[in-house]
Image 1 (tube, rainbow, N blue to C red):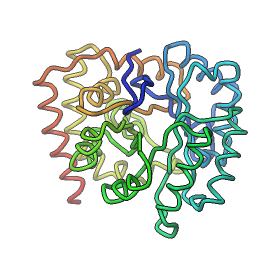
Image 2: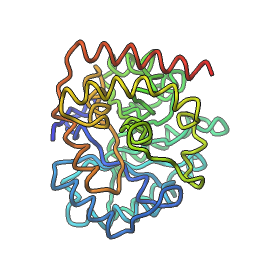
Image 3: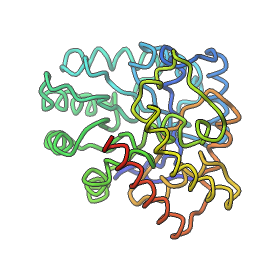
Image 4: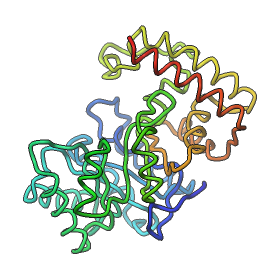
Length: 310
């Protein structure tokens, strides 16, 4: 595993973070708590020290499972969770944080995110409560997720934001215009979710013959619409060509591309498959040439423009 400095802190986090959304169940098919606990242990053994969950994942179930999995190994990891949009008032936030700490079996978290902004609750009040809990030692660092540039600027007026977590991949590059340059300038860690576009960038839906069940929540998501899957084929063809030349998979290539982006810190990857997990972590070893990166950049931008225009 490879590691990177976390923001302005003296902590170092693995370039792949273990995303715990799937272990909460609900929207995802669930392989069972014991299997997920085993997956966390495998991740730790493979050198991953960054784990990301949220109170919203399975209404706290993801936190409970992760708490059981890390019992006795808390000191080995950098633990992040998130407060839900509905709990951003100061009183509700404190209750939510207390409940998350209990489920996780710890007396502090390394990183506590605002999961989604809530325009009905003043951000200044939320940030003030986060700073208060930071001073009390319940959270070490404050992060924001799904924030745009104006909201990030507003949040920074009250306290230091150490991490930004937004959707980022070869099919979703909105942060590159303003957020990413700002984070580079201010030494803010940049974390990605949907790092392989919920499976599209593995090639499973273009080369593997995979099809979503009607009950799969992804079926109605933007990138999975039939016209968009068709548009994405050009990018996947280019990815497969480069991946084959590197003797890696398309999914590994998608992650490797992220690791080659200036200012990028860690990719959240969630899977309940041991095979896919072990494959994903090898992406940190891939080295892409300037030519490969240039081709991926151009074709990715072209495909995103087509999708945005449909």
